[in-house]
Image (cartoon, rainbow over all chains, first blue to last red; front, top):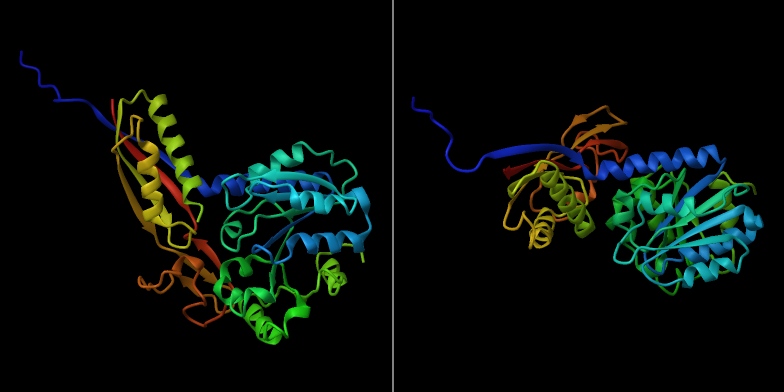
Length: 224
Length: 123
């Protein structure tokens, strides 16, 4: 009998149907559960390089005066400069170095909180990597997302990055004192922000002097 | 902007699946990237080709399809796609406004995914 067999090697399909970004979102939901269980309010602080993320966190910590009841995850590519600056304010700090990555992701946050004693921590600030693009796509599980921009970044930062400003619960414009020398119209920036995200409070700050910090604390639902 | 890390993850998933299924060679992989994902298809393809080198997937075809976005407007109730403007390099940053009422208040229901659909393997 003549048997007909297929020629050559067998080719087959492996169906994977794997959403690579969904994995991060799932982990972020788990982080959120962990924060809720531990009764912690988690805040993701995003903003471009040099916008004043660390200075803002330092100013908030000073105003809050909650000492080691506040923990900070400091995300950076390679150095520990920011972690050391924050540690001076008395909060617990854990440094996460992303190496080559342009953003923090939910897995890095999970590893960080696993290594931290969260027993009496009430507030967790997560300082994201300086970047206005990638962090928007990688939720970490924080309850609130704050985006800080500064007047020294020029007049178009908000309109150029609608994606991340849309995601924000609080929008901060820092370096208020430099608006005049930089010829920046704060009302124009506010209009840009309100157009993209009308529900997010728009707060003007000078983090080094502490201006506007109580408004941030209030907007984040922290004690005043 | 995070094309490298996503590509690295895709390559690992592909090679794991091939090993698990005792494949000898990968012929092609099929990806679908949402038009609002912050990923550039050309760069993803480049990195996957680079990272496949020296493995059973070296030389495999990388097929990328674009998934259309779908938004739901909270102001006027519009449900549907966003106007296509293939010329705009900032398209992935999101539609600036609802195509029907120009509101900024809309939810993105689809179009931010990056899905590894399937791979074609020689046994």
